[in-house]
Image (cartoon, rainbow, N blue to C red; front, side):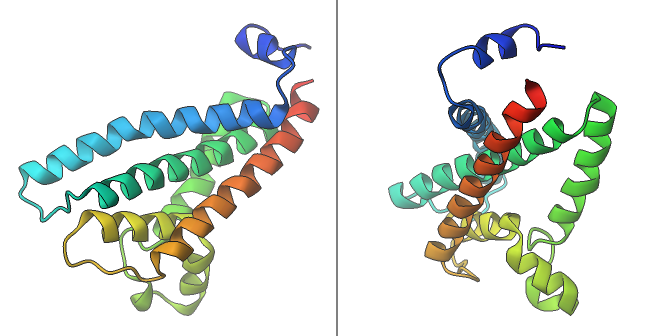
Length: 173
């Protein structure tokens, strides 16, 4: 059965599958900026010691866009592999929640058991969290180093876009 609607129009366009996937990733990143703005506003209202310089704010914007793009593309991969919305939601949660809990978003990596510590070091969310804490909060220092943080996010995005672009035409057509 052929796809119907907007997706069908995209698939018959001359745009490559990688461009379609990248567009979806970028749109997710731009939407995430609204959420980041709300978090920043709430933190400011609670008198959290935020950094307001141009470079930290620019870094936060880039990190939010990259992180949202990585996880939106990861969701697209899951959606391409499953056939129903219910399965997508279940499998998406099954994969997303461990990524969240096995990152440094809640607990420092140093207090994690060895296996979780290893997993947290390959988890892109750990690197995004590191960027956001370092750039948002006064007195916060990076665990991994900002260049490595950004490199991991960019590398993760390239990897998931390549996988999604490869899977997209096979599943949809």
